[in-house]
Amino acid sequence: MFNERKALQMTLQSLLEQRTVLRRQYVDQDKQLGMDIKQILIRIRELDGQEGMGGSEDAEEEAATAADEIPVELTRRMKIRKAHIRHNYLEVAQHIEDLLRESMMPMSLVELCDELKKRHKVDFASPYIGVQKSLKYLPQVKIEKDGRKLTFSL
Image 1 (cartoon, rainbow, N blue to C red):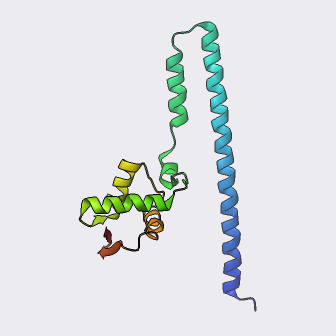
Image 2 (image 1 turned 90 degrees about the horizontal axis):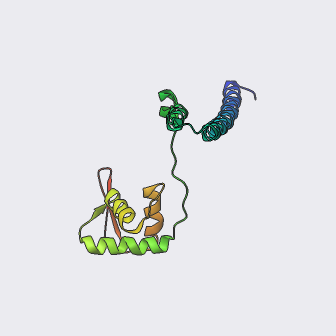
Image 3 (image 1 turned 135 degrees about the vertical axis):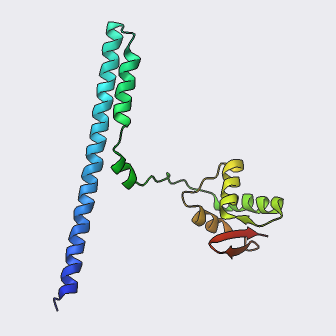
């Protein structure tokens, strides 16, 4: 039975596919422009080197700032993702246990992640998920919730 709901689902699917295509196009064009800018900067440096110009720094600064200027509208929409890093969750679990033993007080998720980053250079793309994966190896850790805030203790 072909009804309005089915038609709307098909339209939605079509729009989502168009959106994906547009995003890919944008990324490809942005990469191409970036490569073009890089080539122009290289050529400017070559010319300045040949002529022995002292003002090459000014030209480079102008070109670099022009390349770095992104419209505010685009920066609002862009999500910046951290690079995916594989962690040894067993090792991270040991670090968490050590931190909780040291503090002798419950630690919030933010405090725990800050200490992991500061002391052991462990930076999770998603702190909640990273800590949860590590806590699989620490059944003795108690997780309590105070409003929206998670606290961890031994």
